[in-house]
Length: 262
Image (cartoon, rainbow, N blue to C red; front, side, top):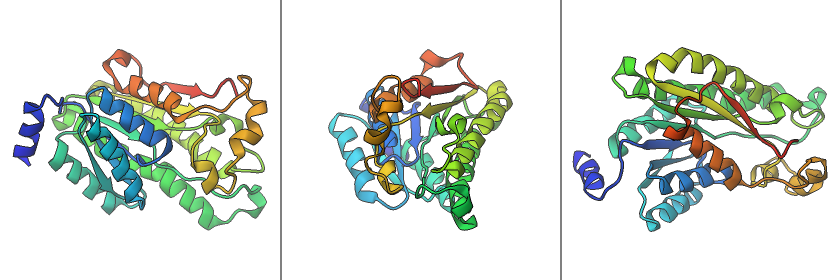
C-alpha cells in the first residue's frame, strides 16, 4: 500500500487531494468524479450494486491519466461504510474531499399512499447514509484528528424548498434534513479546517427519474423552468468541484441552487 502511494507520487499524482464520491457510477456523481480527476484529485468511486457503471467511470478517469478506484458500499449500512473508508485509506491515502451524492427517490405518490417502509428507506439512504459518511470524513480531515482540513459537499435538492407535493414529499423532507445537517456541521467543524456546503440541483437530466418511474420527467416539466430546459449533470458537477477546491476557501455553510431559477 505504501508502494502504491509512492508510485502515484512519482507519476505526479497529487495524492494530498483524495476524494470519495458516493453514488459515483451514474449521473451527477459520475460527472463529478470525472471532472475532479481532471483537476488532480485521486478519486474513489463508490457504488452500491452497479459495479459495471462505477468501473466504467474509473476506466475513463485512468484513460485520461488520472487516478481512480471503485469501492462498494451501501451507505445506509454503517459496517459497509467503515469498510469503504478503510479501503480508501489504504489505496489512496487520507481523505480530503467527500461528495455525499448517493441517494434515491421512489414512485410518485401522495403522502396518504406512502408506506413507513418507503420513508425508512428514503431517510436511511439520503440522510443517515450522508451523515455516516460525513462523520467518517471528519475523523480523517479534522485537525482535531490529525488531519489538515478538507471539504464536504452534500447533495440536497431544490425539492427541499419546493416540497414536491403529490410526488416526492418524503424525498423533499429528506433533502431538507440535508440542508439542516449542512448548516450545523459547517459551524461545528469550521475550526478544524473543514468546509461543508450543499448543492441543490433542480430538474436535472439523469437516470434518477427513471428509477422513480418517470423517465421523461425532465421533458414533461421543463416548461415550468424559467430557463426553459432541464440542467445537465456536468453543470452541477462544475459547482461541486469548485466547492471542493481552494478557490472556495472562504465558502462554507452555503446552500447553493443549480435550478435554472425553478
